Length: 304
Image (cartoon, rainbow, N blue to C red; front, side, top):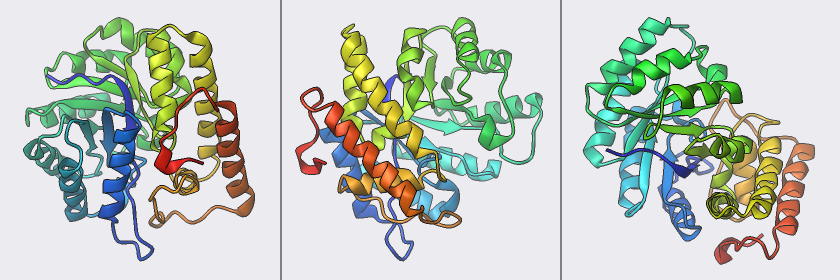
């Protein structure tokens, strides 16, 4: 059984200027992650604008991802609002040989805890490893630690991406859901403290842009090199702070373009960001490079 851990890069979906999915860009992005030493990627999550893709497009993205990710762990976001669509996406991911699927409470409808528990258990009947996604700001539902504990006893539920940002809540989950249940943070600036409290890793959007820094952070923690870990942590925090000053993932794609990475436009309802924010993103990227010169080795093809 797959249990998630370490750095899992949250990937964007690359689009061409006409809005079509850029599958060549996807291939290039995955290869960039590989060169940076990343072992695990999450595709079609919130960062991947999955809600703006049709089911046909989502399945094509899955297929192209699996073709180009040999030797890597692949988690697919299955975040379509309609449960039947989620079931279809989980089944597709299983057929393709993905490692796990990310699942959440349906957005907007404000389900009860009982509703969510029943739904997750229904997804589990497909016999595919599932990572819960607790994201109260996006789903209008916050999982309790008791619910997470009950769901963790289902064999297929192998972990959680916890994105509330509440570190006390994170500790409650760890106490109630011991290893090997994977406790992942969705807050990039909480990766270091999450591991310090017994967490297992994170699904990080900053890793789409600076995977080398994220991997260096993870290794420094493992090596107990806490001075280097702090340097990398603060660089991740700098980028994370600026990425959410406009609609996600618009600033993220701008940062990727700054490095020469394929990202393309964002689909509606997202638009471009103003020039002031654009300069702020670029300034942060320059500061990260300056701070980590000689500390982190960046992929030569995408030096910045």
